[in-house]
Amino acid sequence: MANTASIIERSEVEEIFSELGLTGVLSGALGKDWNKHPAGAKLTSINPSTGTGLAEVLCATEDDYENIVRDSETAFETWRMTPAPLRGDVIRKFGDALREHKDALGKLISLEMGKIYSEGLGEVQEAIDICEFAVGLSRQMYGKTMHSERPEHRMYEQWHPLGMIGIITAFNFPCAVFTWNAAVASVCGNTMVWKPSEKTPLISIAMMKIAQKVFEEAGHPGVMGMIISPDSKLGEKMAADKRFKLISATGSTRMGRSVAQVVAERFGKSILELGGNNALIVMDDADMDMALRAVAFGAVGTAGQRCTTTRRVLVHESVENELVEKLVKVYGSINIGDPLDKDTLMGPLIDRISVDHMQNALTKIKEQGGKVICGGDVLEGKGFFVKPAIVLCQKPIPMMKEEVFAPILYITPIKDVKEAVHIQNDVPQGLSSAIFTNSMQKAEWFLSHKGSDCGIANVNIGTSGAEIGGAFGGEKETGGGRESGSDAWKAYMRRQTCTLNWGAELPLAQGVEFI
Ligand code: NAD
Image 1: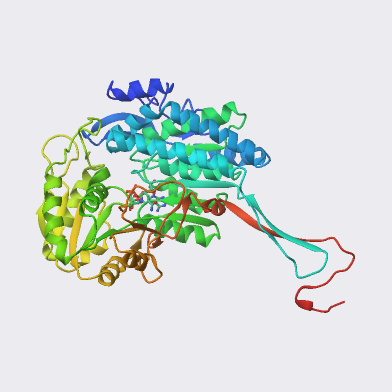
Image 2 (image 1 turned 180 degrees about the horizontal axis):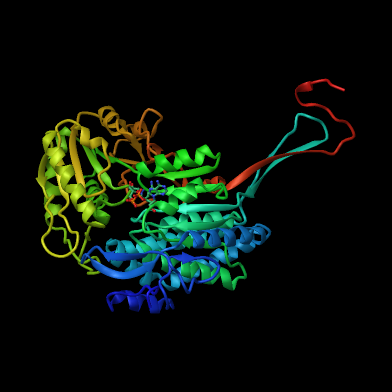
């Protein structure tokens, strides 16, 4: 059948999909109903470990877009009236369903995105954790009460859902970032349409089908919808569409710059979670073994494709040689290969473009005086494998200000914590940062307002691997958005200040006299 998308390789994907109970056409248009006759363009999901197709997905058409948006707006009318703790109960079931399918989802993430299985499982766990957080939140979306300056008046604030929101996500966290948004936004009473990355359609379909089953069984179809597009077109359409009260966009700074402008032009709200360029400072009094492990995981984990990846190490000059020597040894022992093999520590890059991008960046780095002392090569054979690179730079070079989404680690010597923080902050991005020190003064200086300018600042913990309990996001070109824990939920709601006069007079504020 011409309009039937299929599993190309009779491989693990088929097994995983049947384990998840997902059979039939792989439709990238998931509204209230599973679209049985999708007519959109075919998109092939590529396995980055082999470079071959895993499955073909039929993308959403403009008509599908309209239908899914309409379903979502309709669903909002009943979902907003459902008490928050009951909404929380549906999210609890969503979390339970993710828990039940954790292994299969983790495997699918490894297959399609290329991160190692342990990290794939970790990503699903993050999704489960945020569901639990959202369940608790469903009984804690508190508003404040204030003392009115006028007698016999009561003043308080309350929080209402925004309406339909759009979620645009990147390829590198295809499961967790959707859930950060979806769990919190739905508990707040919103409905949502998700446009996942065109590079990870299968895990997105799996996640959405699991979510939709739970919502449908709870009597709330249409709360979650999804449109897969072979490129960014439908994402651009969402950004410009006034019906989306909030666009939560995760991806590159280039994408965020466009989304921010388009959404602001129509006075919509946005949450932007964009690129990072994270530094890890190692002082002379640091625990070297801890620092070493944190740098290795931060720089090599997820093949350098995390927004929080450690990209720069700023190390005290007295311990630079020791750190570099040990790090080169660790890099030499890292198994690169099939992300589903339990001995593998680093999988492939997402695609050929990323491999080329890394190679071009290394050429520029060398031109600018950076010394590549280890790795950087492209591995022969199938898939998009590279060796992680270490680059020594006596002083910062211009390339260090760019986020190259690949495992390139710069090491630069520093004399003291002030110089380190100055170099750390002297980049356009402001996501994650870390210092390794056993000095309370240096740690506190780093955490003070004169210290790190990033959204995340860690002491004796690396730059990557945040917990869901905190608000996640960064400053400057990282976009300023916050998602996940703490009070990030407030961005998914509108605040209303209410003043109630229960007296028989009509006093004006600030003592103003009128009629
Ligand atoms: P990308 O910007 O290429 O794509 C991200 C998403 O945006 C995709 O769904 C894409 O289709 C869509 N898109 C692209 N241009 C658009 C436009 N003009 N309008 C609307 N939608 C558009 O990013 P990527 O390569 O998938 O992911 C890597 C980037 O994401 C890195 O820069 C990384 O740091 C960043 N990231 C940030 C966070 C964070 O929380 N700060 C988390 C994960 C990834």
